[in-house]
Image (cartoon, rainbow, N blue to C red):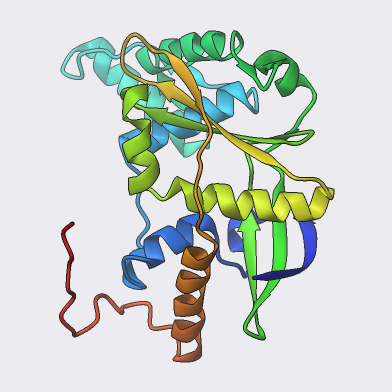
Length: 252
């Protein structure tokens, strides 16, 4: 995969005519999977964690009340009104966990530098558009690293238990994200970038661990991009699910 040009995305990040790590991850299941829009409770918590720790956004924090009580019904009305106004809202129990994780993060060092220092002097969620080429066919990739600091890229992840991250990394193909982000930012900066995952535990004891992946996947990425380009050439059928063929699974 060759990168021809990289530019900054200043607005409408998600509307850029480009594929992304998330798209490729879903596309590897089927084209139809890549166009399913959904948000889980875990994803909402992760968004709030990013908003509060990285972007310092303000949330309306509320105590959960019994919805059957007078106070609970009044609270529901207030929350619905704030949501209609586009305000960010969060239950206090989730807010408290995020603030605990924020404190934990600030005690961590990454390659000899404290996280709080990194956060003060880094580019936060900078959108980048890479114009790429593979086998003579052009396509765009968009990325939005959480943190770019000197020769480091840092991505915040949430999880129930930090010790399960190695399984999540394989399941959600985090090595694809690592590879694409590192390749594009390295090309832009002119220096070799190191990618770190700051993994935050939603469940008690609400700890934080820093991970770095080791992998060899350039061919793996190019295989899925070739499948995407072939699908694009054949008309971009967004309803295509699974191929009408037998898939052989080798257990070893």
